[in-house]
Length: 152
Image 1 (cartoon, one colour):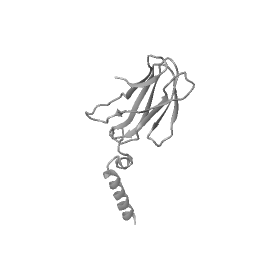
Image 2 (cartoon, one colour; image 1 turned 45 degrees about the vertical axis):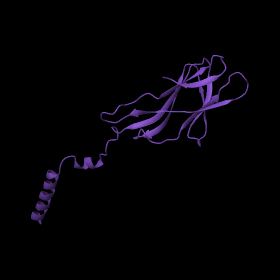
Image 3 (cartoon, helix red, strand yellow; image 1 turned 90 degrees about the vertical axis):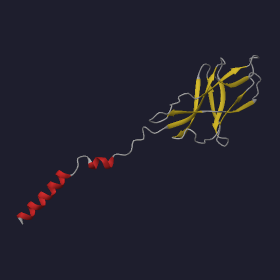
Image 4 (cartoon, helix red, strand yellow; image 1 turned 180 degrees about the vertical axis):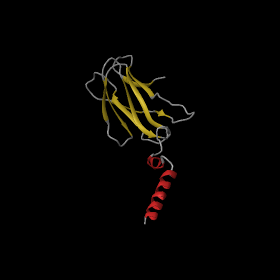
């Protein structure tokens, strides 16, 4: 009986000594996702009018309009997740606003917006683009007609 216990103990000790250190920890470690690309479609709107502009925006023609108030001198960025594919097909973004100021009526002007894929391109030689497609609200020369133009 003593010989059997010694043989069992020797076998267990050999298994422990021969087992590679860190093996159980390796099973629990997942694959890092930090170096994968992560993009979003983004456009920004700057208010250069001198007054607060109220507008609405949405992504896709079936989603609900969301209201926004943009104070003069501020820039608002709107984004939609693209994940790892900067060319992913996403709903088209829209903006609408009252294009005539001071007439006590609402005359909507609606724009189909463009956007840039911005974000982290992942590890490697690809470029990390960080600027959204930029737009600006301005008044026309008559001081009443509001327009939204792409910035260059």
